[in-house]
Length: 306
Image 1 (cartoon, one colour):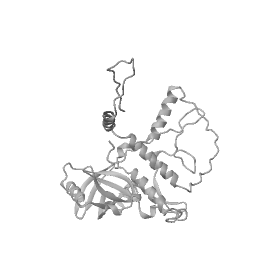
Image 2 (cartoon, helix red, strand yellow):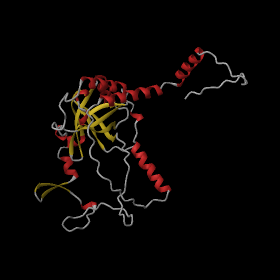
Image 3 (cartoon, helix red, strand yellow):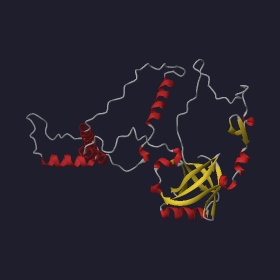
């Protein structure tokens, strides 16, 4: 479990709740080490003085703000913290809004908000009120050297703080590259596409999804280790860049085929007991066949269900 990396208080109105923040995200990206292909030695990142070219140890590194080209003001962590003590130590809720009003594009990184004191009454009060109201708390918090916008919600009985992007951090849509509404699309095609969406409709089950690409890469690693290719460098094949595919103008055949395939896959998913029941009914209705002369009587074949 990730450790708490921030401690302070969560405030709304005059209520202050001592809390800590713990990462809610557990990223499982594959970790690769950069190597020198000559002898497969690790390639490191070096902090160096751009004037002398010499390496600089961490204890000599300071943070500077360039107020003019080549001119800096040095600020220590303690000075940054005391520039606004309340902002650096408080998650301050300014308002409560309907969560549906927040565009999903604004959400960035989630953190669990945990009370520093077990059985905190003020924490429980905010959680219950927030859950019953169905609203989201809009707050601001300073993390490192940035003041971040955030949304406070309830998840699995605990408070969750989702960092939000500021409006200026979201690029606008390139309207020139997007087709105008209804451009070249017939009502029949839209109806067929809506039908396909209906056929593919499902309940959101995140547990059914996983990173198949990572599994394939790890399987490739296992095969290379098993075959002893632990230091072999395979040169990339020279491939011609494929020209972008031309967009299909007549979409109806593709939509029809998609619906047919969806129907076929739905038929395959019929429960075994249902198929067995139907098979039993068919067998009951079908007239009994006479066994050919010379065959052994009393022998019946069993049909297996998938």
